[in-house]
Length: 149
Image 1: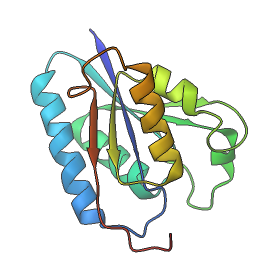
Image 2: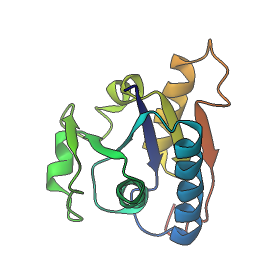
Image 3: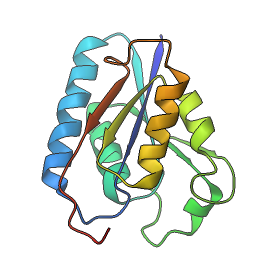
């Protein structure tokens, strides 16, 4: 069975509109399931148990998707803890060290808000796939942020 690896990036802290973010990801995951009923879908995110990664993993479990934590070793030391994912892929020491390997690993990307690293990874993904139409490979959404900038 063919596997489809979907990266999900966005806010890694919790000061954002979680209801809007969950609704966006729920709709995107439902679309993935409908468009690819025969594929094994793997949701790849930042391994931490907060923010967009937590929402993505919770929904992935509901949909029966595989969960993969893709991060740097620094994820082992975050206060929020780590989501109990199916697969763990650690690259580098500090957050951001894994970005290039992450965008090479995934087939498509969903960004829901996010800060510097999420936007950097989105830019890397666009560069890597510049020769292809991005409409089906990249979905970008903004949600309200309530924290300090």
